[in-house]
Amino acid sequence: MLKETFTVMRDLPRVREIIAVLMRHGLGNLVHRLGLARGLERSADILHLPGNHEIEALDAPVRVRRALEELGPTFIKLGQVLATRVDVFPPEWIFEFEKLQSHVPALPYGTIVAELTDILGADPHTIFTEIDPEPVGSASIAQVHHARLSGGEEVVLKIRRPDITPKIEADLRILRHIAGLMEFEFADVRRYQPVKIVDEFAKSLRRELNLSVEARNLERFAQNFAGQTDIIIPDIHWGYTSERLNVQSWVGGVAGNQIEQLAVLGYDRKVLAARGADAVLKMVLIDGYFHADPHPGNVKYLPGDRIAFLDFGMVGRLPHPRRDQIVDLLAALAERDERGILNVLLEWTGDVVVDEEKLAADIADFMFNYENLSLKDIQFGHLLNDVAVIMREHEITLPSDLTLLFKALITLEGLGRQLDPDFQMVHHLTPFVREVIIARYHPRSLFKTGKESLFEAVGLIAGLPRDVGKLIKQVRRGQFKVDLDLKRLDHFGLQLSKSANRLTMGIVTGALIIGSSIVMTVKTGPMLFGLPALGFIGFLIAFFNTLWIIFSIWVSSKEER
Image (cartoon, rainbow, N blue to C red; front, side, top):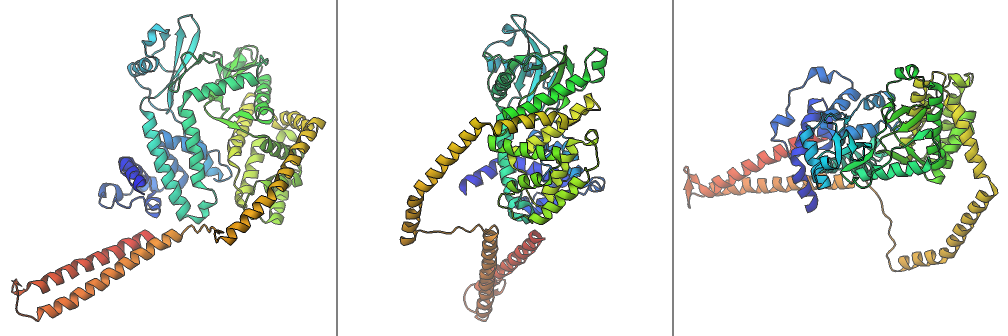
Protein backbone atom coordinates (compact mmCIF):
# COMPACT_ATOMS: atom_id res chain seq x y z
CA MET A 1 0.00 0.00 0.00
CA LEU A 2 2.79 2.41 0.92
CA LYS A 3 4.57 1.65 -2.35
CA GLU A 4 1.36 2.36 -4.32
CA THR A 5 0.96 5.67 -2.47
CA PHE A 6 4.48 6.78 -3.39
CA THR A 7 3.86 5.72 -7.01
CA VAL A 8 0.64 7.73 -7.20
CA MET A 9 2.33 10.79 -5.71
CA ARG A 10 5.20 10.48 -8.19
CA ASP A 11 2.84 10.19 -11.17
CA LEU A 12 0.30 12.76 -9.94
CA PRO A 13 1.17 15.49 -12.51
CA ARG A 14 0.72 13.00 -15.36
CA VAL A 15 -2.54 11.72 -13.82
CA ARG A 16 -3.85 15.30 -13.75
CA GLU A 17 -2.86 15.72 -17.40
CA ILE A 18 -4.62 12.48 -18.44
CA ILE A 19 -7.79 13.47 -16.57
CA ALA A 20 -7.79 16.90 -18.24
CA VAL A 21 -7.46 15.36 -21.72
CA LEU A 22 -10.24 12.84 -21.07
CA MET A 23 -12.53 15.58 -19.74
CA ARG A 24 -11.84 17.80 -22.77
CA HIS A 25 -12.87 14.99 -25.09
CA GLY A 26 -16.20 14.38 -23.42
CA LEU A 27 -15.09 11.32 -21.40
CA GLY A 28 -15.90 12.78 -17.99
CA ASN A 29 -18.33 9.97 -17.16
CA LEU A 30 -15.52 7.46 -17.53
CA VAL A 31 -13.27 9.57 -15.28
CA HIS A 32 -15.88 9.71 -12.50
CA ARG A 33 -16.99 6.09 -12.92
CA LEU A 34 -13.42 4.86 -12.48
CA GLY A 35 -12.84 7.18 -9.53
CA LEU A 36 -9.85 8.81 -11.23
CA ALA A 37 -10.91 12.19 -9.93
CA ARG A 38 -10.85 11.07 -6.30
CA GLY A 39 -8.46 13.26 -4.34
CA LEU A 40 -8.50 15.96 -7.01
CA GLU A 41 -11.88 17.46 -6.11
CA ARG A 42 -10.27 20.84 -5.47
CA SER A 43 -8.76 20.96 -8.95
CA ALA A 44 -11.61 22.93 -10.44
CA ASP A 45 -9.59 23.58 -13.59
CA ILE A 46 -9.66 19.82 -14.28
CA LEU A 47 -12.95 18.57 -12.91
CA HIS A 48 -15.17 21.46 -13.98
CA LEU A 49 -13.92 22.14 -17.49
CA PRO A 50 -16.59 23.73 -19.70
CA GLY A 51 -18.11 21.21 -22.10
CA ASN A 52 -17.12 21.40 -25.76
CA HIS A 53 -20.41 20.72 -27.53
CA GLU A 54 -18.66 20.27 -30.87
CA ILE A 55 -16.48 17.46 -29.47
CA GLU A 56 -19.30 15.90 -27.46
CA ALA A 57 -21.35 15.64 -30.68
CA LEU A 58 -18.74 13.29 -32.17
CA ASP A 59 -19.08 9.51 -31.91
CA ALA A 60 -17.35 7.85 -28.95
CA PRO A 61 -14.70 6.05 -31.09
CA VAL A 62 -13.63 9.37 -32.64
CA ARG A 63 -13.40 11.09 -29.24
CA VAL A 64 -11.36 8.23 -27.76
CA ARG A 65 -9.00 8.22 -30.74
CA ARG A 66 -8.44 11.98 -30.47
CA ALA A 67 -7.80 11.66 -26.72
CA LEU A 68 -5.21 8.91 -27.33
CA GLU A 69 -3.48 11.09 -29.93
CA GLU A 70 -3.25 14.00 -27.51
CA LEU A 71 -1.97 11.80 -24.67
CA GLY A 72 1.16 10.92 -26.64
CA PRO A 73 3.38 7.94 -27.57
CA THR A 74 2.32 5.34 -24.99
CA PHE A 75 -1.39 5.84 -25.60
CA ILE A 76 -0.94 5.99 -29.38
CA LYS A 77 0.90 2.68 -29.25
CA LEU A 78 -1.89 1.27 -27.05
CA GLY A 79 -4.45 2.36 -29.64
CA GLN A 80 -2.45 0.64 -32.37
CA VAL A 81 -2.42 -2.56 -30.33
CA LEU A 82 -6.17 -2.27 -29.68
CA ALA A 83 -6.64 -2.00 -33.46
CA THR A 84 -5.56 -5.66 -33.60
CA ARG A 85 -8.34 -6.73 -31.20
CA VAL A 86 -11.00 -7.43 -33.80
CA ASP A 87 -12.45 -9.94 -31.33
CA VAL A 88 -13.08 -7.19 -28.75
CA PHE A 89 -13.97 -4.02 -30.65
CA PRO A 90 -16.58 -3.59 -33.40
CA PRO A 91 -15.48 -2.30 -36.85
CA GLU A 92 -16.15 1.40 -36.13
CA TRP A 93 -13.70 1.31 -33.19
CA ILE A 94 -11.07 -0.64 -35.18
CA PHE A 95 -11.42 1.89 -38.02
CA GLU A 96 -10.61 4.78 -35.67
CA PHE A 97 -7.75 2.98 -33.89
CA GLU A 98 -6.16 2.22 -37.27
CA LYS A 99 -5.89 5.96 -37.91
CA LEU A 100 -3.49 6.37 -35.00
CA GLN A 101 -0.02 7.16 -36.28
CA SER A 102 3.00 7.85 -34.10
CA HIS A 103 4.51 10.54 -36.36
CA VAL A 104 5.82 13.32 -34.14
CA PRO A 105 7.86 16.45 -34.83
CA ALA A 106 11.51 15.66 -35.52
CA LEU A 107 14.14 16.47 -32.92
CA PRO A 108 16.71 19.12 -33.94
CA TYR A 109 19.84 17.71 -35.58
CA GLY A 110 21.98 19.11 -32.77
CA THR A 111 20.03 17.06 -30.21
CA ILE A 112 20.51 13.92 -32.32
CA VAL A 113 24.28 14.50 -32.59
CA ALA A 114 24.52 15.04 -28.81
CA GLU A 115 22.59 11.81 -28.17
CA LEU A 116 24.79 9.87 -30.62
CA THR A 117 27.90 11.24 -28.91
CA ASP A 118 26.60 10.05 -25.53
CA ILE A 119 25.71 6.60 -26.90
CA LEU A 120 28.93 6.01 -28.86
CA GLY A 121 31.26 7.73 -26.43
CA ALA A 122 32.88 9.60 -29.31
CA ASP A 123 32.10 12.21 -31.94
CA PRO A 124 29.74 10.39 -34.37
CA HIS A 125 31.37 12.16 -37.33
CA THR A 126 34.56 10.15 -36.67
CA ILE A 127 32.54 6.94 -37.27
CA PHE A 128 30.08 8.12 -39.89
CA THR A 129 31.50 10.27 -42.68
CA GLU A 130 28.01 11.51 -43.54
CA ILE A 131 24.82 11.87 -41.48
CA ASP A 132 21.82 13.34 -43.26
CA PRO A 133 20.48 16.16 -41.01
CA GLU A 134 16.96 15.53 -42.36
CA PRO A 135 15.43 12.42 -40.77
CA VAL A 136 14.09 9.61 -42.95
CA GLY A 137 11.38 9.08 -40.35
CA SER A 138 10.36 10.48 -36.97
CA ALA A 139 8.22 8.32 -34.71
CA SER A 140 7.29 8.40 -31.04
CA ILE A 141 10.08 6.10 -29.87
CA ALA A 142 12.91 6.66 -32.32
CA GLN A 143 14.15 8.95 -35.09
CA VAL A 144 15.78 7.54 -38.24
CA HIS A 145 18.64 9.11 -40.23
CA HIS A 146 20.47 8.04 -43.37
CA ALA A 147 24.27 7.88 -42.87
CA ARG A 148 27.47 6.50 -44.38
CA LEU A 149 30.22 4.56 -42.62
CA SER A 150 33.88 5.50 -43.05
CA GLY A 151 34.23 2.46 -45.37
CA GLY A 152 31.60 3.90 -47.69
CA GLU A 153 28.67 1.61 -46.78
CA GLU A 154 25.27 3.30 -46.51
CA VAL A 155 23.48 2.65 -43.24
CA VAL A 156 20.39 3.64 -41.27
CA LEU A 157 20.72 5.11 -37.78
CA LYS A 158 17.69 4.46 -35.60
CA ILE A 159 18.15 6.60 -32.47
CA ARG A 160 15.89 6.29 -29.43
CA ARG A 161 14.49 9.62 -28.31
CA PRO A 162 16.29 10.94 -25.21
CA ASP A 163 14.47 10.72 -21.85
CA ILE A 164 11.51 8.84 -23.33
CA THR A 165 11.78 5.78 -21.05
CA PRO A 166 10.73 7.46 -17.73
CA LYS A 167 7.68 9.01 -19.43
CA ILE A 168 6.59 5.69 -20.90
CA GLU A 169 7.14 3.85 -17.60
CA ALA A 170 4.96 6.41 -15.78
CA ASP A 171 2.23 6.00 -18.41
CA LEU A 172 2.41 2.20 -18.12
CA ARG A 173 1.96 2.38 -14.33
CA ILE A 174 -1.07 4.63 -14.76
CA LEU A 175 -2.50 2.46 -17.54
CA ARG A 176 -2.26 -0.64 -15.40
CA HIS A 177 -4.07 1.17 -12.58
CA ILE A 178 -6.83 2.26 -14.99
CA ALA A 179 -7.10 -1.30 -16.35
CA GLY A 180 -7.50 -2.62 -12.81
CA LEU A 181 -10.26 -0.09 -12.14
CA MET A 182 -12.05 -1.04 -15.37
CA GLU A 183 -11.83 -4.73 -14.51
CA PHE A 184 -13.21 -3.94 -11.06
CA GLU A 185 -16.02 -1.57 -12.07
CA PHE A 186 -17.33 -2.94 -15.38
CA ALA A 187 -18.55 -6.54 -15.33
CA ASP A 188 -18.96 -6.66 -19.12
CA VAL A 189 -15.33 -5.55 -19.60
CA ARG A 190 -13.90 -8.02 -17.08
CA ARG A 191 -14.05 -11.01 -19.45
CA TYR A 192 -11.61 -9.25 -21.81
CA GLN A 193 -9.01 -9.13 -19.00
CA PRO A 194 -7.88 -5.51 -19.44
CA VAL A 195 -5.08 -5.92 -16.87
CA LYS A 196 -3.66 -8.80 -18.89
CA ILE A 197 -3.92 -6.77 -22.10
CA VAL A 198 -2.01 -3.87 -20.50
CA ASP A 199 0.63 -6.24 -19.07
CA GLU A 200 1.20 -7.77 -22.51
CA PHE A 201 1.23 -4.32 -24.10
CA ALA A 202 3.80 -3.14 -21.53
CA LYS A 203 6.01 -6.14 -22.26
CA SER A 204 5.79 -5.47 -26.02
CA LEU A 205 6.46 -1.74 -25.63
CA ARG A 206 9.51 -2.34 -23.40
CA ARG A 207 10.88 -4.69 -26.06
CA GLU A 208 10.33 -1.97 -28.66
CA LEU A 209 12.16 0.55 -26.47
CA ASN A 210 15.22 -1.71 -26.52
CA LEU A 211 16.52 -1.24 -30.07
CA SER A 212 18.89 -4.19 -29.74
CA VAL A 213 15.81 -6.46 -29.53
CA GLU A 214 14.81 -5.36 -33.04
CA ALA A 215 18.37 -6.12 -34.17
CA ARG A 216 18.07 -9.70 -32.85
CA ASN A 217 14.72 -10.02 -34.61
CA LEU A 218 16.35 -8.98 -37.87
CA GLU A 219 19.05 -11.62 -37.48
CA ARG A 220 16.53 -14.37 -36.85
CA PHE A 221 14.46 -13.43 -39.91
CA ALA A 222 17.65 -13.29 -41.99
CA GLN A 223 18.43 -16.87 -40.89
CA ASN A 224 14.90 -18.03 -41.74
CA PHE A 225 15.20 -16.57 -45.25
CA ALA A 226 18.82 -17.55 -45.88
CA GLY A 227 19.20 -18.68 -49.47
CA GLN A 228 16.05 -16.88 -50.68
CA THR A 229 17.46 -14.14 -52.89
CA ASP A 230 14.07 -12.56 -53.59
CA ILE A 231 13.49 -11.61 -49.91
CA ILE A 232 15.84 -9.01 -48.41
CA ILE A 233 16.40 -8.47 -44.67
CA PRO A 234 18.77 -5.61 -43.66
CA ASP A 235 22.11 -6.50 -42.03
CA ILE A 236 22.92 -5.34 -38.49
CA HIS A 237 26.14 -3.58 -37.53
CA TRP A 238 26.56 -4.94 -34.00
CA GLY A 239 29.68 -2.86 -33.35
CA TYR A 240 27.50 0.26 -33.03
CA THR A 241 24.12 -1.23 -32.05
CA SER A 242 22.88 -0.96 -28.47
CA GLU A 243 19.71 -0.49 -26.45
CA ARG A 244 19.49 3.16 -27.60
CA LEU A 245 20.89 2.87 -31.15
CA ASN A 246 20.22 0.47 -34.03
CA VAL A 247 22.57 0.63 -37.02
CA GLN A 248 21.55 -1.45 -40.03
CA SER A 249 22.30 -1.51 -43.72
CA TRP A 250 20.46 0.96 -45.93
CA VAL A 251 17.90 -0.51 -48.34
CA GLY A 252 17.08 1.51 -51.43
CA GLY A 253 14.35 0.69 -53.93
CA VAL A 254 10.75 1.83 -54.18
CA ALA A 255 8.78 2.45 -50.99
CA GLY A 256 5.72 0.25 -50.53
CA ASN A 257 3.37 3.24 -50.60
CA GLN A 258 4.69 4.43 -54.02
CA ILE A 259 3.04 1.71 -56.09
CA GLU A 260 2.50 3.99 -59.11
CA GLN A 261 6.29 4.03 -59.70
CA LEU A 262 6.49 0.24 -60.09
CA ALA A 263 5.05 0.11 -63.61
CA VAL A 264 7.30 2.98 -64.73
CA LEU A 265 10.40 1.12 -63.51
CA GLY A 266 9.30 -2.19 -65.05
CA TYR A 267 8.43 -4.13 -61.87
CA ASP A 268 5.96 -7.02 -62.12
CA ARG A 269 3.28 -6.20 -59.56
CA LYS A 270 1.70 -9.68 -59.71
CA VAL A 271 5.04 -11.30 -58.89
CA LEU A 272 5.61 -8.85 -56.02
CA ALA A 273 2.16 -9.59 -54.56
CA ALA A 274 2.75 -13.33 -54.77
CA ARG A 275 6.24 -13.18 -53.25
CA GLY A 276 5.14 -10.92 -50.41
CA ALA A 277 2.23 -13.23 -49.54
CA ASP A 278 4.38 -16.36 -49.69
CA ALA A 279 7.04 -14.74 -47.50
CA VAL A 280 4.58 -13.76 -44.74
CA LEU A 281 2.76 -17.12 -44.87
CA LYS A 282 6.12 -18.88 -44.53
CA MET A 283 6.83 -16.73 -41.46
CA VAL A 284 3.47 -17.66 -39.93
CA LEU A 285 2.90 -21.31 -40.84
CA ILE A 286 6.43 -22.69 -41.25
CA ASP A 287 8.68 -20.57 -39.01
CA GLY A 288 6.13 -19.56 -36.35
CA TYR A 289 7.84 -16.16 -36.17
CA PHE A 290 6.33 -13.37 -38.26
CA HIS A 291 6.45 -9.66 -39.05
CA ALA A 292 3.39 -8.37 -37.20
CA ASP A 293 2.90 -5.20 -39.23
CA PRO A 294 3.57 -5.81 -42.97
CA HIS A 295 1.95 -2.55 -44.15
CA PRO A 296 3.29 -0.62 -47.19
CA GLY A 297 5.48 1.67 -45.03
CA ASN A 298 7.48 -1.35 -43.82
CA VAL A 299 8.13 -2.78 -47.29
CA LYS A 300 10.43 -1.79 -50.17
CA TYR A 301 10.57 -3.17 -53.72
CA LEU A 302 13.93 -3.74 -55.38
CA PRO A 303 15.07 -4.51 -58.96
CA GLY A 304 14.49 -8.13 -59.96
CA ASP A 305 11.07 -8.01 -58.26
CA ARG A 306 12.68 -8.52 -54.86
CA ILE A 307 11.04 -7.46 -51.59
CA ALA A 308 12.73 -5.98 -48.51
CA PHE A 309 10.98 -6.08 -45.12
CA LEU A 310 11.80 -3.26 -42.69
CA ASP A 311 11.05 -2.32 -39.06
CA PHE A 312 10.98 -5.52 -37.04
CA GLY A 313 10.14 -3.80 -33.76
CA MET A 314 6.80 -5.64 -33.56
CA VAL A 315 6.90 -9.37 -34.25
CA GLY A 316 4.59 -12.26 -33.44
CA ARG A 317 5.42 -15.77 -32.22
CA LEU A 318 3.31 -18.90 -32.65
CA PRO A 319 4.18 -22.09 -30.74
CA HIS A 320 3.53 -25.42 -32.51
CA PRO A 321 0.13 -26.18 -30.86
CA ARG A 322 -1.17 -22.74 -31.80
CA ARG A 323 0.22 -23.09 -35.33
CA ASP A 324 -1.69 -26.35 -35.72
CA GLN A 325 -4.90 -24.61 -34.66
CA ILE A 326 -4.29 -21.82 -37.17
CA VAL A 327 -3.66 -24.34 -39.95
CA ASP A 328 -6.90 -26.13 -39.05
CA LEU A 329 -8.82 -22.83 -39.07
CA LEU A 330 -7.32 -21.65 -42.38
CA ALA A 331 -7.94 -25.03 -43.99
CA ALA A 332 -11.55 -24.99 -42.77
CA LEU A 333 -12.08 -21.44 -44.08
CA ALA A 334 -10.53 -22.30 -47.45
CA GLU A 335 -12.66 -25.46 -47.75
CA ARG A 336 -15.75 -23.85 -46.14
CA ASP A 337 -15.80 -26.57 -43.49
CA GLU A 338 -18.26 -25.51 -40.77
CA ARG A 339 -17.35 -28.31 -38.35
CA GLY A 340 -13.64 -27.52 -38.66
CA ILE A 341 -14.23 -23.84 -37.80
CA LEU A 342 -16.43 -24.81 -34.84
CA ASN A 343 -13.80 -27.18 -33.41
CA VAL A 344 -11.08 -24.50 -33.48
CA LEU A 345 -13.29 -21.83 -31.90
CA LEU A 346 -14.30 -24.25 -29.14
CA GLU A 347 -10.59 -24.82 -28.39
CA TRP A 348 -10.24 -21.03 -27.93
CA THR A 349 -13.16 -20.65 -25.52
CA GLY A 350 -11.03 -21.43 -22.47
CA ASP A 351 -13.18 -21.15 -19.33
CA VAL A 352 -16.02 -19.39 -21.13
CA VAL A 353 -19.27 -21.39 -21.26
CA VAL A 354 -20.51 -21.32 -24.85
CA ASP A 355 -23.88 -22.34 -26.30
CA GLU A 356 -22.40 -24.83 -28.78
CA GLU A 357 -25.62 -25.25 -30.77
CA LYS A 358 -26.05 -21.51 -31.29
CA LEU A 359 -22.35 -21.13 -32.15
CA ALA A 360 -22.69 -23.91 -34.77
CA ALA A 361 -25.82 -22.22 -36.19
CA ASP A 362 -24.04 -18.84 -36.42
CA ILE A 363 -21.08 -20.45 -38.21
CA ALA A 364 -23.48 -22.13 -40.65
CA ASP A 365 -25.13 -18.76 -41.39
CA PHE A 366 -21.72 -17.16 -41.81
CA MET A 367 -20.55 -19.83 -44.29
CA PHE A 368 -23.86 -19.63 -46.20
CA ASN A 369 -23.03 -16.03 -47.13
CA TYR A 370 -19.92 -17.28 -48.98
CA GLU A 371 -21.43 -20.45 -50.45
CA ASN A 372 -22.13 -19.16 -53.94
CA LEU A 373 -19.09 -16.88 -54.25
CA SER A 374 -16.15 -17.87 -56.43
CA LEU A 375 -12.69 -17.78 -54.89
CA LYS A 376 -11.75 -14.57 -56.71
CA ASP A 377 -14.69 -12.76 -55.09
CA ILE A 378 -13.82 -13.84 -51.53
CA GLN A 379 -11.74 -11.42 -49.49
CA PHE A 380 -9.91 -13.37 -46.82
CA GLY A 381 -9.74 -10.33 -44.55
CA HIS A 382 -13.53 -10.13 -44.54
CA LEU A 383 -13.67 -13.82 -43.65
CA LEU A 384 -11.44 -13.28 -40.63
CA ASN A 385 -13.42 -10.21 -39.58
CA ASP A 386 -16.66 -12.21 -39.76
CA VAL A 387 -15.09 -14.93 -37.61
CA ALA A 388 -14.09 -12.21 -35.12
CA VAL A 389 -17.69 -10.93 -35.03
CA ILE A 390 -18.95 -14.43 -34.16
CA MET A 391 -16.33 -14.70 -31.40
CA ARG A 392 -17.35 -11.30 -30.02
CA GLU A 393 -21.05 -12.23 -29.98
CA HIS A 394 -20.30 -15.45 -28.08
CA GLU A 395 -17.86 -13.73 -25.69
CA ILE A 396 -14.93 -15.80 -26.97
CA THR A 397 -11.74 -13.81 -26.47
CA LEU A 398 -9.08 -14.36 -29.11
CA PRO A 399 -5.89 -15.81 -27.52
CA SER A 400 -3.37 -13.00 -27.10
CA ASP A 401 -0.77 -14.59 -29.40
CA LEU A 402 -3.30 -14.59 -32.27
CA THR A 403 -4.41 -10.96 -32.22
CA LEU A 404 -1.29 -9.83 -34.09
CA LEU A 405 -1.67 -12.72 -36.53
CA PHE A 406 -5.22 -11.82 -37.54
CA LYS A 407 -4.15 -8.22 -38.06
CA ALA A 408 -1.06 -9.26 -40.07
CA LEU A 409 -3.07 -11.51 -42.40
CA ILE A 410 -5.70 -8.81 -42.98
CA THR A 411 -2.97 -6.21 -43.67
CA LEU A 412 -1.17 -8.66 -45.97
CA GLU A 413 -4.26 -9.22 -48.12
CA GLY A 414 -4.79 -5.46 -48.41
CA LEU A 415 -1.17 -5.03 -49.55
CA GLY A 416 -1.54 -7.87 -52.05
CA ARG A 417 -4.68 -6.40 -53.58
CA GLN A 418 -3.02 -2.99 -53.87
CA LEU A 419 -0.33 -4.59 -56.01
CA ASP A 420 -2.60 -7.00 -57.88
CA PRO A 421 -6.39 -6.44 -58.02
CA ASP A 422 -6.81 -10.18 -58.85
CA PHE A 423 -4.78 -11.26 -55.80
CA GLN A 424 -6.40 -14.24 -54.04
CA MET A 425 -5.10 -15.06 -50.58
CA VAL A 426 -6.71 -18.52 -50.63
CA HIS A 427 -4.54 -19.62 -53.58
CA HIS A 428 -1.40 -18.82 -51.59
CA LEU A 429 -2.69 -20.34 -48.37
CA THR A 430 -3.53 -23.75 -49.80
CA PRO A 431 0.03 -24.98 -50.58
CA PHE A 432 1.32 -23.92 -47.14
CA VAL A 433 -1.63 -25.50 -45.30
CA ARG A 434 -1.15 -28.72 -47.29
CA GLU A 435 2.57 -28.76 -46.52
CA VAL A 436 1.98 -28.33 -42.78
CA ILE A 437 -0.73 -31.00 -42.67
CA ILE A 438 1.43 -33.50 -44.59
CA ALA A 439 4.32 -32.80 -42.21
CA ARG A 440 1.99 -33.24 -39.23
CA TYR A 441 1.04 -36.79 -40.30
CA HIS A 442 4.50 -37.86 -41.40
CA PRO A 443 5.55 -41.07 -39.56
CA ARG A 444 8.42 -39.21 -37.87
CA SER A 445 6.02 -36.53 -36.50
CA LEU A 446 3.48 -39.13 -35.39
CA PHE A 447 6.20 -41.09 -33.58
CA LYS A 448 7.46 -37.95 -31.84
CA THR A 449 3.91 -36.93 -30.80
CA GLY A 450 3.13 -40.43 -29.54
CA LYS A 451 6.37 -40.57 -27.54
CA GLU A 452 5.67 -37.18 -25.92
CA SER A 453 2.09 -38.21 -25.05
CA LEU A 454 3.32 -41.50 -23.57
CA PHE A 455 5.92 -39.79 -21.38
CA GLU A 456 3.34 -37.21 -20.27
CA ALA A 457 0.84 -39.96 -19.34
CA VAL A 458 3.49 -41.95 -17.44
CA GLY A 459 4.54 -38.80 -15.57
CA LEU A 460 0.90 -38.03 -14.68
CA ILE A 461 0.27 -41.56 -13.37
CA ALA A 462 3.56 -41.65 -11.46
CA GLY A 463 2.79 -38.35 -9.75
CA LEU A 464 -0.83 -39.22 -8.90
CA PRO A 465 -0.15 -41.00 -5.54
CA ARG A 466 2.04 -38.08 -4.41
CA ASP A 467 -0.64 -35.52 -5.32
CA VAL A 468 -3.43 -37.50 -3.62
CA GLY A 469 -1.26 -37.99 -0.51
CA LYS A 470 -0.51 -34.27 -0.38
CA LEU A 471 -4.23 -33.45 -0.64
CA ILE A 472 -5.13 -35.87 2.18
CA LYS A 473 -2.43 -34.40 4.46
CA GLN A 474 -3.77 -30.88 3.85
CA VAL A 475 -7.29 -32.01 4.78
CA ARG A 476 -6.05 -33.71 7.96
CA ARG A 477 -4.08 -30.64 9.06
CA GLY A 478 -6.93 -28.30 8.28
CA GLN A 479 -4.85 -26.62 5.57
CA PHE A 480 -7.24 -27.38 2.69
CA LYS A 481 -8.38 -24.07 1.24
CA VAL A 482 -10.95 -22.97 -1.31
CA ASP A 483 -10.20 -19.59 -2.89
CA LEU A 484 -13.21 -17.55 -4.02
CA ASP A 485 -12.53 -14.60 -6.29
CA LEU A 486 -15.31 -12.18 -5.39
CA LYS A 487 -14.46 -9.14 -7.48
CA ARG A 488 -16.58 -6.59 -5.63
CA LEU A 489 -16.25 -7.91 -2.08
CA ASP A 490 -13.51 -5.43 -1.22
CA HIS A 491 -15.69 -2.64 -2.65
CA PHE A 492 -18.54 -3.79 -0.39
CA GLY A 493 -16.15 -3.77 2.59
CA LEU A 494 -15.05 -0.24 1.74
CA GLN A 495 -18.64 0.97 1.55
CA LEU A 496 -19.45 -0.78 4.83
CA SER A 497 -16.45 0.90 6.49
CA LYS A 498 -17.58 4.34 5.24
CA SER A 499 -21.12 3.72 6.50
CA ALA A 500 -19.82 2.64 9.91
CA ASN A 501 -17.68 5.80 10.11
CA ARG A 502 -20.67 8.01 9.30
CA LEU A 503 -22.85 6.15 11.82
CA THR A 504 -20.19 6.59 14.53
CA MET A 505 -19.90 10.30 13.76
CA GLY A 506 -23.69 10.60 13.91
CA ILE A 507 -23.82 8.95 17.35
CA VAL A 508 -20.98 11.17 18.62
CA THR A 509 -22.72 14.26 17.22
CA GLY A 510 -26.02 13.28 18.88
CA ALA A 511 -24.23 12.73 22.19
CA LEU A 512 -22.53 16.15 21.87
CA ILE A 513 -25.87 17.88 21.25
CA ILE A 514 -27.52 16.20 24.27
CA GLY A 515 -24.49 16.77 26.53
CA SER A 516 -24.14 20.42 25.43
CA SER A 517 -27.84 21.03 26.00
CA ILE A 518 -27.45 19.80 29.62
CA VAL A 519 -24.32 21.94 30.15
CA MET A 520 -26.21 24.99 28.85
CA THR A 521 -28.56 24.76 31.84
CA VAL A 522 -25.60 25.12 34.26
CA LYS A 523 -24.81 28.78 34.86
CA THR A 524 -21.49 28.22 36.66
CA GLY A 525 -18.04 27.80 35.12
CA PRO A 526 -16.32 29.66 32.23
CA MET A 527 -18.57 31.72 29.96
CA LEU A 528 -18.24 32.54 26.23
CA PHE A 529 -20.49 35.15 24.54
CA GLY A 530 -22.63 35.00 27.67
CA LEU A 531 -23.09 31.23 27.35
CA PRO A 532 -21.42 28.31 29.14
CA ALA A 533 -18.16 27.79 27.20
CA LEU A 534 -18.24 23.97 27.27
CA GLY A 535 -21.83 23.86 25.99
CA PHE A 536 -21.06 26.40 23.24
CA ILE A 537 -17.94 24.46 22.09
CA GLY A 538 -19.91 21.19 22.14
CA PHE A 539 -22.61 22.68 19.87
CA LEU A 540 -19.91 24.08 17.55
CA ILE A 541 -18.22 20.68 17.19
CA ALA A 542 -21.63 19.03 16.61
CA PHE A 543 -22.36 21.62 13.88
CA PHE A 544 -19.12 20.84 11.97
CA ASN A 545 -19.66 17.10 12.42
CA THR A 546 -23.11 17.47 10.86
CA LEU A 547 -21.66 19.38 7.89
CA TRP A 548 -19.05 16.62 7.41
CA ILE A 549 -21.71 13.87 7.45
CA ILE A 550 -23.87 15.75 4.90
CA PHE A 551 -20.89 16.39 2.60
CA SER A 552 -19.72 12.75 2.87
CA ILE A 553 -23.18 11.45 1.91
CA TRP A 554 -23.36 13.91 -1.04
CA VAL A 555 -19.92 12.88 -2.39
CA SER A 556 -20.77 9.19 -2.00
CA SER A 557 -24.04 9.61 -3.92
CA LYS A 558 -22.16 11.32 -6.79
CA GLU A 559 -19.61 8.49 -6.99
CA GLU A 560 -22.38 5.91 -7.23
CA ARG A 561 -23.95 7.58 -10.27
